Image 1 (tube, rainbow, N blue to C red):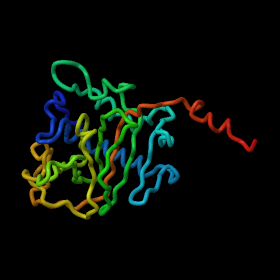
Image 2 (cartoon, rainbow, N blue to C red):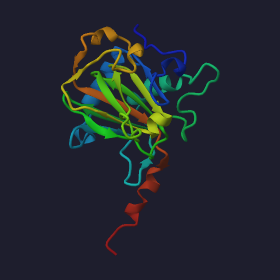
Image 3 (cartoon, one colour):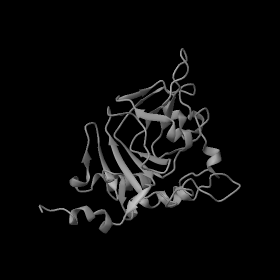
Image 4 (cartoon, rainbow, N blue to C red):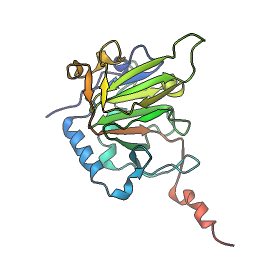
Length: 251
């Protein structure tokens, strides 16, 4: 049976030459698990898709309220297992048993965005923001893509802006935390292809599971799904979250 490949600790998955800290793990899920996830995602009822100007997404267990509060509910089993237990099983380093979400308020991700990017679609540089504990774990399925990262603050006059490119393979896991979360923007260029793929331009080249697949320096994108796992800081029970409805009315 095919198995995922996990490092002994996140220390072995640190992406070099980036602000602290980003981790990259290829083959985090198996090909069979990828197929199961794609089948589930592509067969949900159409109303579960939220259509944005440049892409569509699903939110589990729900979208956040306008004040960035999550109405608490469990993640669906097909989405949380095996990803969340596997993610929490990886120690930050070999000297202790903490994982990347050990210090988050709920000690585990409680929210997942399922973003669909068809070939040619991208997303402008952005940050994940203060609604979440500063850790984001993204599993890529369906296609590879290049994530463009740049520092929010520019260097001194005359200095070039700090920019990096991370190649996210199918079935890989990318984790961003600390300054990579708070001090950087990330986005995806709207393009049918990713080009100039080589060890000089891709910061995680040595961590790739199959660099040979990109040895021609060019990759034609297919439809990619990103599964973004985060811990929302503010949560409320459904009853409390709907209190504003009970207070409404015409009187």
